[in-house]
Amino acid sequence: ADTIGGVTISGGPIATLAVGATDTDTFTGSYTLTQADIDNGSFFNTATVTGTDPNGEDVSDPDDETVTTPQDPSIDLVKTGTFNDEDGDTYADVGETISYAFTVTNDGNVTLSDVTVNDVIVREGGNEPVPVEPVLDDQGTPLDPSDDRNVGDTNQDELLDVGETWLYEAAYTVADADTVEGQVFIQNVAVATATTPAGEVVKAADGLLLAGGQGVGSPGYWKNHPEVWMDANGDGTVDDQDVLVIGDWGGDGVPDDQGFTLTTEEALRVLDASQTQKGGDKRFTLGRSLIASWLNVTVAGNNYAVGDVDVGEAIDEATAWLLAFDADGNGNP
Image (cartoon, rainbow, N blue to C red):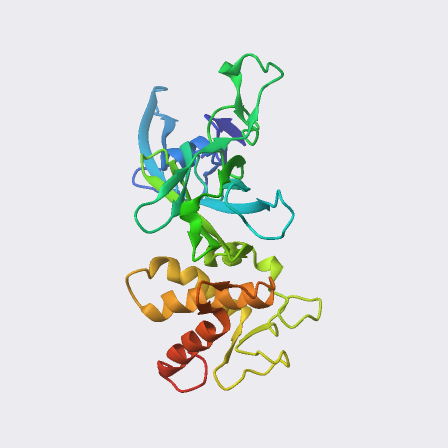
């Protein structure tokens, strides 16, 4: 076998090729794709066959082929928050702080550039941006920022390579505008964006909620952290028998009158599928929020209330609404 231009050719030579004859099985070639080939979206190369005529002169003929290298650009964003209870009363107060951490991972198959993370506090009357900063490696020269790179940029090429995870952080001080009837209520959503080699933009989002002075997870949080709750039946093993019994207020594994059962696979599908259902099927939209609320109350133990809203009553109302649209009548909306 000979390797020419990265292509390994095996077979041949053909001793004699008669006029009009075709030999299709003698030569084979193989090539190992590089990341640059995948980023390019295709691989082009030219093969040339050469022979000698009866007069001893060489004759040749080239042929080229372009093979598409399928691309699957994707990023994943996971956001976590830590409430800093400076006065130690276990509740969030105006003036106390929240520390946020963000991980952005290239979980696709192409190199990404121009990575940004934006975070905003979502509130009526207008959103408030939260400054997000990269966690930097100062390269041992803290007084010279010119060579600083994200700590996750392991090869220091300023590109989010396939499999790399970059780190970001932010801090927010609870403000008067974050209180609802005397209780702190903060909902904020982070969005990570990056650019593919073809100039397309890919995005990922994750959000968190701080309500009633206690931290709770958004639907995106629970989707991104199934390890926290997937062993729903508590037997120590994550398997197909794990179920999420929504409306099981008695804790006996059986849904109450206004309740139903989802496997963890079904629950994850709703949490994920509804990302593309906003403005569409409201069963997905409500189902996503309902699953997150149930996990916040049961798994996270946050029996909170916001203003006059009783969370248990709201969960029952949402469950009843979904059961009313249980099209096949199997008790699972």
